[in-house]
Length: 314
Picture (tube, helix red, strand yellow):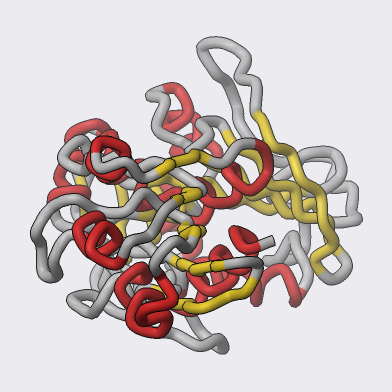
């Protein structure tokens, strides 16, 4: 339960820690919570430091439940592993390991006699998913790519006579997805056909995402999107270097197929509307080989059904 609480605390930093991950920490001694904390903002104290300050002397002999491996290097703050050792913490239970090869918090703590455990099962999966974009950006040097699409029950992406496939609640959820993404992208075909703005509207926004279009120019007159003309692999590398950790792909089936064929789609979000179109483009026109997804979840989204699944687990 204490790791569950740490996961809840970590979410309080969502949207304010970028480019750092969200992290939560809970200190327990003799069955009592003696300190809690979360990473609130970039450059601010880490979750472990906040929990240690709240616990004070009660941290000695305590167990730390933390969502991510404690850091062991100097950045904008001192190493959390050193702070834990100085406070006399006896045991650390972490939800996930840090993908940064420079972080050796587990090894550091174990070498000093601290008992370290890495969680397993659903809590561990939740901890990894909580920072899925940051983990991919850190480990693979590219953004975490989510392909979002809306389809009918017969798998079509358009409905004759109407602009929208999905319902109002699903369209609002797309704006929430944009608000949580570093960048949003479409292909040139979608840009020319729909002239999408790709901004997050009608929802709380800390910062608007960058708005991209992949393809060959020129851009239509008046377009405010950024044109990306290189190969997908090159552009993903460049975007990562520019600090883009998460990319929401909203293009049509042609762009989606290109990303999928290149192995660059990590997550699928498919809104299924209670309609039959009878004709029109399908979700993915073709692939070099079938793909198997994992972690499939179905949930209601207004009148629609939202299916989410991973092509690459974080």
